Image (cartoon, rainbow, N blue to C red):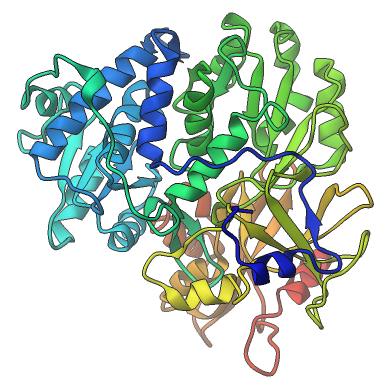
Length: 549
């Protein structure tokens, strides 16, 4: 925890059955995230930062350093100031990091957005973060340009590519050309703040159980703490001579944090905009990738697809898997196939600044999500009494420490429901820890469906289903699937005397949401939805029913 923790806080964290990290933590510098990134870029020099897996194009840390400062000067001239918000809606690309750092230098908060969002989802997310400008790619320019017309005040849109579909949308080169390129970059410094624990650096989208995405506010201190973890060799081992595969999407907390970690350590990433099996395997083989951060669906691909044997993956020394549970069978199969002594599983959530535990390299336990991150605390509470439990007893995971988010943007009620008065973050996940402090996740209290590491809130899909005139009642659960984790499946009660097909219902929903939320598990018609006396859907009963159908 921070050195300035109160005596009562320290006493609370030293109570019975409170687990503390065993990894020595580094002090968190009292500077802004923007200044920290600026210092790291200067230190990294002219080494290669990123390589495009398809084109082979490269960008160096020096180029990122100079272009991000130049852009910051231009954005300041355009009126960007501390406390403003800047959204970025794009697939992974080399210059995505330029507006990221430029915004942080100026003290603006970032709001990365899923480029696959539907119009309704995008509008909802933008109404949370309320950005004054949005950076887009050719893939997202059209939908963003349409949605911003509904926002007041209307944010400006800037195209990351060299060309734009509209004369009203300037490109990144256009914006850079608005100001003279600085002649001396060494004089530039980032905006500082009085209290980095109270200053928002990033707003990441995380789905709740009661509807659309929430905006998770992470402070400069949250992310600076994470940055120190990435620079801690006892926790991770990024370095310039250990290339990392940059497949995970930037807008997701997992991918976003890795981007920061790479800069903090001077690491090199081989960047992919989408998962393509041949590009994925060729990138590892051709660029001798050492570290491969993945999610469980791609682990299944590595474990089972016959094409794997056609590529030389011998450079891979470390696989880190997170964002969703990984089965012991798949973990063991990949280790055997690639000749790895371990696969490092991690656990966390956006609300905990992405990662609160990770399997150590020296001692890995199959099925475990590892040990606590530095300066992090865990208690597993009884579901009935909320009392902290001892080793090997299952309860809800709760975490405390400098990785706990500031709260949900514009939603104090949801914040209070997630972070209690003592500062403990209640995850809604069920699990236990063993005598050595290793964490095991076994179930979820929350109703979120995890499709390929994407969070799918059933309530959002249920609300759409109930808008169909032929639907009387609806409930959505996750259908277990080896390749994707879970597939959204809908149980529907038809209106009396009304005929409607499952395919019609599925198309009605899929047309209003992003691909991760499509009803890939299908639609099942039943006479009624099981509920408790207060009207809450009994999803466990639906899962039992599913096994009989």
